[in-house]
Image 1 (cartoon, rainbow over the protein chains, first blue to last red):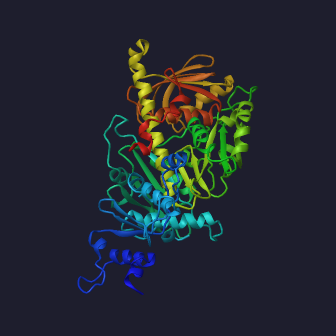
Image 2 (cartoon, chains in turn red, yellow):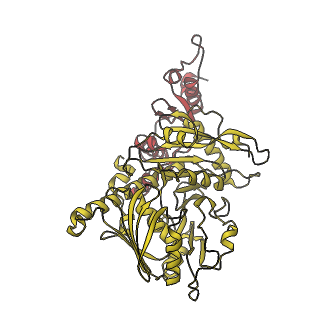
Image 3 (cartoon, each protein chain N blue to C red):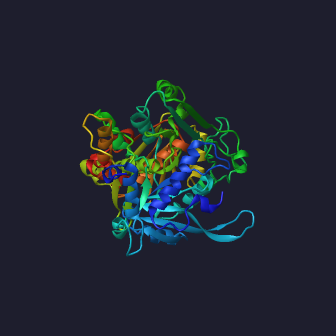
Length: 119
Length: 436
């Protein structure tokens, strides 16, 4: 498999994220465990994000083309300060009219105040 | 079910608790598991410290005082362990009973998977102490949630409402004399008949209540498509007063199957497949309730400053409750005889002074906050004068209890403001999207 193809494979990207969050030996690792070193732990893999009720209603009322149940690939949380990381892996870019953009809007709405509220 | 399945062993962070509760919620929502999967339930608790005239205490201190072994998971999330006794072996051990999250200095949420009956009894013991009180979701508040949140969630979805009214003081019209068993004491909250998790059914009444002669005890459950309930509800409420005593309500989950059962004493039982969905709903209710309490206090204490008549009084605006169906004299007398005994559902203490038939003054105390409370009670209603700065929760407790045990169909005001208007208030800070 050529590198270009491998890098754009969502499963490879997910795998990479998982290794980046796992504890590894201090030398000789293949993937630097940057998230682990920063204190993040994997909270969920492919868990649907539940919007708080008032935000859910606001999005529904807006009649925007936005997913109300986005499913991020990985969520990481750092419990010491409650910070979180929200990941969605994509193989390629997409247009604003595509189905992916609907999901992307859902993901963007899920970050920020909604994320803080839910976790 | 083993306690280790109900709670994660020594969770390192709150996400481990969320994940465990998520798994249980998903299994319970599937509905096929045997043995039965415990439902996650939460209780919204109010810390009465500052508003009760005292100082706010950290939750760890409050629960240590209540006998808990408290372990901090993070700065706002605690694991609570209590000494429990195995019902079969009678052996005592320290077990996790649930987790406490501090929402702000006034409100805490207690999450547990203990059996509903056990959890309620536990919480009921806690709120007997001075530091904590239930959040009181009065019928008016539940009706507001029905109108604003449930009835708009889709006519074809299923909804559920429970109405409950127990006329514990009711006397037959022809029997003015107290029956021989006049030492009747209303059972404390922890002996109250409760709903089972699965069916929302009452347990059999305790024997002391069965000895009593028949009184009105209405328990009515409506489970149907939301549209059908909506079309029938107002007409039913007009013709049968106990249907105004809304006791519990199911809010359908917005993101999946199932929903959230809300009870008057601040309990929320999760019937959705997700713990986050459940917690989101509890936090949504917390914001609404917190906003309503602030508004209640504003109405009560600023009404005093606005009104020259009230300015001279030591209290704030009165709480006025009018019974739409007047009590008979016999019922009224029985209420006065029993409502101020040592243990009573109103958590009031005082010496009634009879001013005439069907009219009584009580200069008493709220046993929960140990603050003075002056009451005028008649067969058609009640006026309560609470001291300045009394916690708004007291108003909601009184209204909820009156509607549950004295008169199901009432009109209430705080000063000149209708109670229904007060509980429908949601200020801009109660909306998450406004950055609160």
